[in-house]
Amino acid sequence: MDHLPKLIEFKGRKPSKAQIFKRCADLADAGHTFIEVQWGENWFTLDKQGNAGNWYGHGWIKDIAADSIAAELNATDPARFLRNHFQIINVR
Image 1 (cartoon, rainbow, N blue to C red):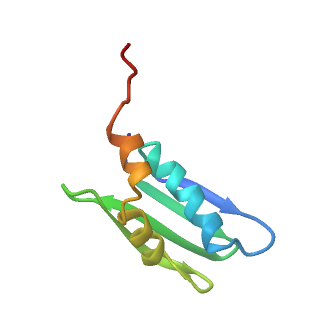
Image 2 (image 1 turned 180 degrees about the horizontal axis):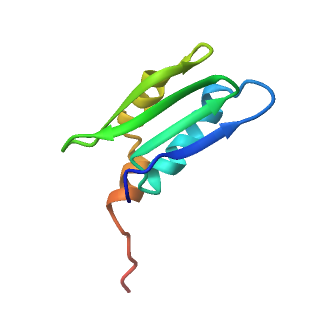
Image 3 (image 1 turned 90 degrees about the vertical axis):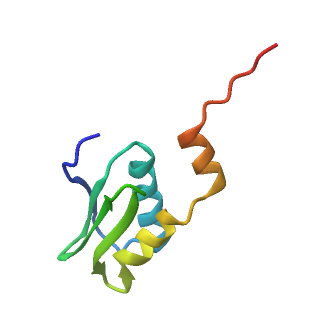
């Protein structure tokens, strides 16, 4: 996947941290390495860098810090790790 920004835009009420994380995790799982999240005048970016592929966050949406979303993306969920790194086949 290229390093072009993928935009997530929320309108209306402030999104919850869970809503933001879900949308970002879906894009991360799809292979995107640069994500921009906007809600009105509030925004932040997530950038996956380095050989280890760590996520870094910059900015805020009200009380939700981009680095907290990045930390959650970096904390490997075992099911997500398996889905992204292994293909399970059934041999009979």
